Image 1 (cartoon, helix red, strand yellow):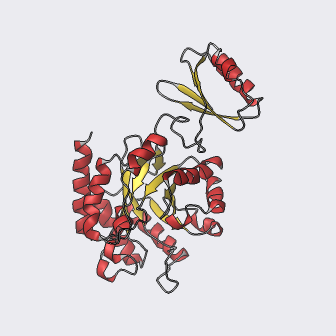
Image 2 (spheres, rainbow, N blue to C red; image 1 turned 90 degrees about the horizontal axis):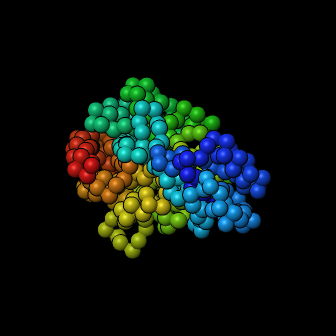
Length: 333
């Protein structure tokens, strides 16, 4: 249930209403926007008299939310959420570019890539330490050593780091990681989501290969229900009957998610297409569609990459993409 409060409400009236609502065994989430204050009620609201509330002088409007996702709902939180990661901001008109290799392979590699993407305008460094692979015989990442190398690259460049978690038991290794990524395969790992909800770290939550937008939002709801509101949604392509690309990039998800939710939306054109030459047009289209950021794979030697070299850009190609994306952002302002 959503209760819109009139701007003329006094502090005493406001506090008295919240105190009364809490006696009805619901939790009250307060969202103070520029033009309106909204109270979001979480819990069993069936016994709350809507007509009684609407009759109060301080109440402007009462709305019941039928969607199963409450906390991530834009009705619940009208203003855009802005996620802060070091000096980088995502959402609310702030655009982020997250770039780096699919997997961390060596100190020399990750530092070289970090320096090049920062010079081209990247605001965060991505790199896989734990790698979920379809085949058990493929490179699985450097694990804890990979995180240490990412931290070395952060020391060299100052870029916040983004890396994927595979299991809740690994959380202690992510204490110095700036953004924890939940990959497509773990989007509905609910026990992991609950644990991430108890942290305060920003979470990059990727849409599953065959999941609906509602299911993505419900996964985000798990994290927020645990107390962590620092979430970025990520559209990374879904599995369809098309075979020319690895996945199908659903760019309609961007405006739809931003209509349904207040959370920022990032697009990953690298995993979506699986083909490096398609990354640029898809990145430009994502920026034009209203995305709050991009996640792009960059490798200094894609031909010899241990993971996903076919979709990785060279530093020179990334520099070109970043410049063109900035032009698109200027054009749609």
